Length: 486
View 1: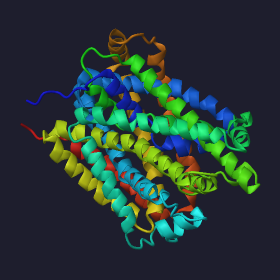
View 2 (view 1 turned 120 degrees about the vertical axis):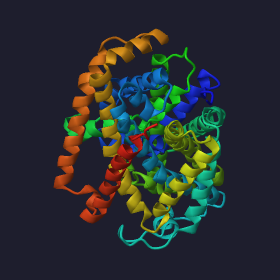
View 3 (view 1 turned 90 degrees about the horizontal axis):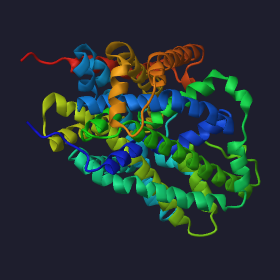
View 4 (view 1 turned 180 degrees about the vertical axis):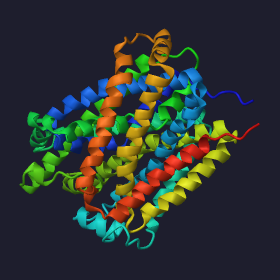
């Protein structure tokens, strides 16, 4: 029997978990969501979500993984075999997400190369959609594959493969670079951003609180979904990572360190982005509101536009920005693959290099859909269903499983006896009552809202395919949970 993998040190584990938590969403999703839903006031529901659901679920996943020393499906199965499917669902959701997440990294690879000659030209908006993506008019107008994006995707998957080739051992070495480098780059961009003319207007736009927004259920829904996504909760990642910890390892303190590090990074990312947007508005002589963008537009249109306006060293700042996106993204990407790989290794006992190669190859082939001329539409649709439904359902199942199947007190006492400080029965209350009620409300509210207005105006056929893919992940979860009789 193969010896159980372990992290080389506590630092390696913390960096790997922080790397999984901190990703592209900290730079482009959090700042936009925070401003859209109340500016500085959004921090209230954000931190409420962090302490009522984020940290409690992170402690749950660490305790579950560490106690069983198994991946998510087999951690669930250790306590109740019939619940292995819930663990498989978590890793399948993560696998589905990484198939398109890697394509965003492929864009970053391409733009890193473009930055040396500022190849996006004087109008990055006219470059990104019609020239780089060659975006079609609707999801069903597939068009051909974009070769330049495929090249970036190949580079991304080669990087992911070699990062996890030996499981925890190789991940533990890679994260010293891929976590520390983006922090350094972010601080460089932060200092540069707040010293630019007009930065104060951008910061004021980001931080001015709109407390009336707190009455909107969408604000609370987005706060909880952002916390789950950004902390890698519900993917099986943290369960797998905790399973590699030595027997005498802190759980609770690690969870707080990782969660707070992630949230501080998001906040600094917001300050960096909006100070830079303030500079862009100042240069153009317009209001900050007219230059705010969301999603890919922020990273691949607005930021290149700002870089063009820098008085010096435009290629340098362009290169380090996209280097930051790459190093932020790689940790999240390979952690999602590692969660699936750990589960598959528990099931089939295949050598890691071969197993990771198979998984990476399958994910690459699925990802080709997102490299087509309609790829951005499908990326958006798949992300909507997997991040907003698959992820929330996986987290809900975790809370129900621990709260009502195995009993939260077992895990709370286990975590307390190993940790630097203890958690009280408030944690049990969160797992049994607050988290299930909140997530059930979030799911119902979201479904009700979508029945009224289809997501982003997509046709029922396009949205139906996204929903079908989510349903396929549920079916695969049940299939994989079945074991052959010995």
